[in-house]
Length: 180
Image (cartoon, rainbow, N blue to C red; front, side):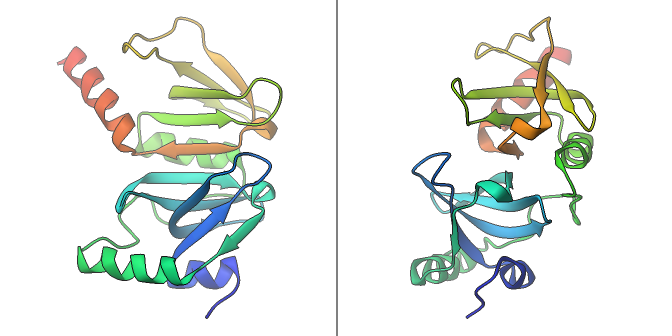
């Protein structure tokens, strides 16, 4: 059985990731992208692919493929669920700037998280601009109203990016109805 992220990427197998300094939860997904700085998973939650998740590799405390992962991958494949459902491929994961730029071109909405530090934050909205130092991000409220002021997130503080989730899909359809 392969024991490295690079070998799991080649097989696009279901893996379990832990980030013990970020939170106590495991993350399960199909590994679909890897660089020195970032990794990308097709996030699996409750036996469904729920978007694409990009994480900082430096936060990963454990990556493994267990018997449970192998069995659940088998069950998913029986249901027609396997790696390769998210786009774009290949992913540009050289840094947060490239990941944000590429994914925002394909997905209008994203979630950016700054999970470490004294005040962890969760941002949902759209990228306005991404530079080497920061991402300028327009957020919206839980009631679907766009904020007037853009947030600025330092790239070195971003811990997670998600696109194409079921959660984002509901808001995306809301905004599409508003402009129709």
